[in-house]
Image 1 (cartoon, rainbow, N blue to C red):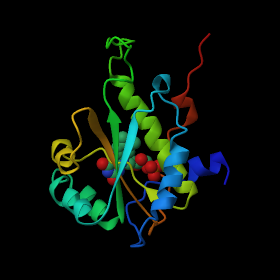
Image 2: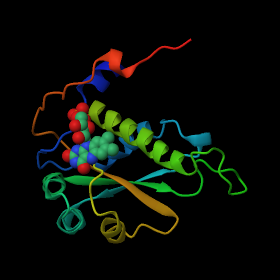
Image 3: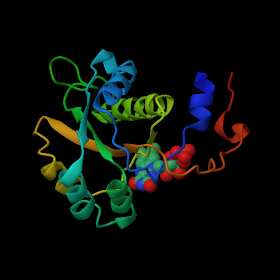
Image 4: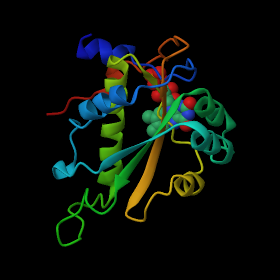
Length: 180
Ligand SMILES: Cc1cc2nc3c(=O)[nH]c(=O)nc-3n(C[C@H](O)[C@H](O)[C@H](O)COP(=O)(O)O)c2cc1C
């Protein structure tokens, strides 16, 4: 699989087979994802792999504003919680912000890491979907996320049980402009 094939053929997967995700396979995916770039190489992204009763509790109690996400989480054999260590990305050593973006760079890092994770998973034969719609306080509490960390996204992962077509992309000329 070329990098281009991996990027083009990765789809958001919302139906999974019941097969478990092997923990060593997951560790290999995390190792690949660790090569994602990050602010001053701070590497603030941490992944929590959730299975079993806790995963189902998150689906039941943490997705009431969008139950469809709850169904997807329940259907997946594993849920990855993408978290970040706060106060590093975007910051100087003295605690001040480096740029006018403030702490926005930590979310940027989490996004870069999440997509790298999803591409690495796709290359390893696993489907994923990045989820932003869930009750963050409830899910953070269920996951016992410590004060110095922040929960950013949830990513159900497993073997795909669907082959969705790629949603249409905007034309390139709408996406790029050239200046000189
Ligand atoms: C930040 C972010 C949040 C998303 N949140 C959800 C979500 O809560 N539920 C869901 O089913 N898909 C979610 N998606 C997946 C998008 O709907 C999906 O990427 C988009 O429709 C394009 O489809 P593709 O990933 O198959 O190319 C999210 C994607 C991103 C990047």
